[in-house]
Amino acid sequence: MPAGFSAPGPRRLQERGGPVKPGRMDTATRTDSTIETYDRVADDFLRRRARTLDEKRWLDRMVGVAPSHAGRRRLLDLGCGTGLPIAAYLSERGLRITGVDAAPRMIALFQANLPHATAHHADMRSLALGEPFDAILAWDSYFHLTPDEQRKMFPIFRRHAAPGAALMFTTGPEAGEVWGDAAGEAVYHASLDPGEYRDLLARNQFKLLDFTPEDPACGDHSVWLARFTG
Image (cartoon, rainbow, N blue to C red; front, top):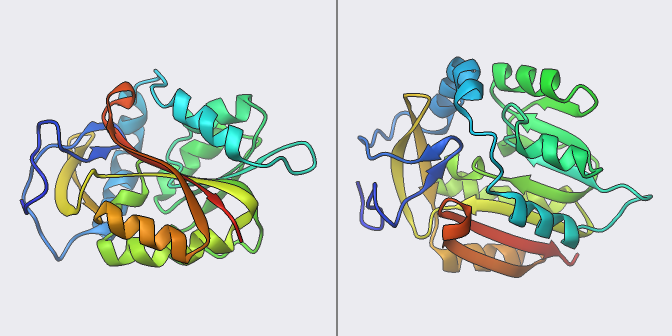
């Protein structure tokens, strides 16, 4: 495990079902193997996923930042997983949900759980939907990308952002890579240095509104919230 990560403990990344556990690093299997893992464990993941919504305060902040489009905010949920509980909560708040996930079983469960939402079986790394959104969310999904893939996501965020759109995503508190756990199987996580995220946001016309590393009120998630100014 490289410098910058010590898990378990106060400095750690978080995966979609809970805190990351330390594991071996294997540069040959990263993002793609993690997608395959989530596809394989999707049903078990859904059973294990807590229905408590520790994320509510941040989700409400994102909605408060997002502009309203014809009376209804449009949300792009990148790495939407099964849609429970986050997308379901945002749908209840009146947002029009578009979910994107690269794992076929995850997106199938998302469609079953949110039948009125739009669902795309697609990889966020090459996403080109050709439409803007008032809020873009990558909660516990973006950090499964390699550092270089994370850098390349910012133009994709920008191309899908409506004027004034909110962007919210989670990372680790500092730069590094680690293998963690999802439903008992290994998944990859990475994070850039916070200073680099700030630079990427600015260069892609996003104004940083808040960065809270390891928020104790939100399961130690490190959360970024920004507004598109382009």
